[in-house]
Length: 111
Image 1 (cartoon, rainbow, N blue to C red):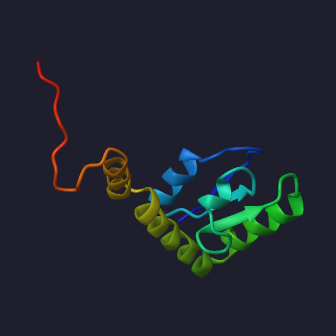
Image 2 (tube, one colour):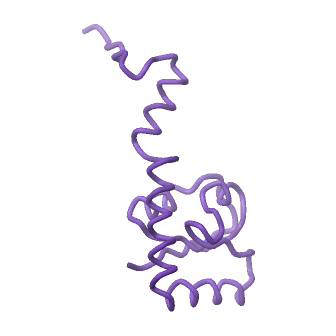
């Protein structure tokens, strides 16, 4: 298993982080915008300060050089995706917004 590194300066909610999580990959990202709402530092990935190359290097070395922590971060990443960003969670959120129950079918347009 690898890891995913995103080097951005600002992002509200990154789809690429969600995609990496869905594949069980821990993510190393800068602690900007809404990224810290996706990544829990040391739980499902690592957050580093923008432009801090020493911190970024240490985070990469920690994940690449240590299989057990990398596997644990990856498992937690997959769990985070499933619980917070997966299809079931998304459908439940849409149903809540539109006032539908989980068992109530969505209305279809008349032809």
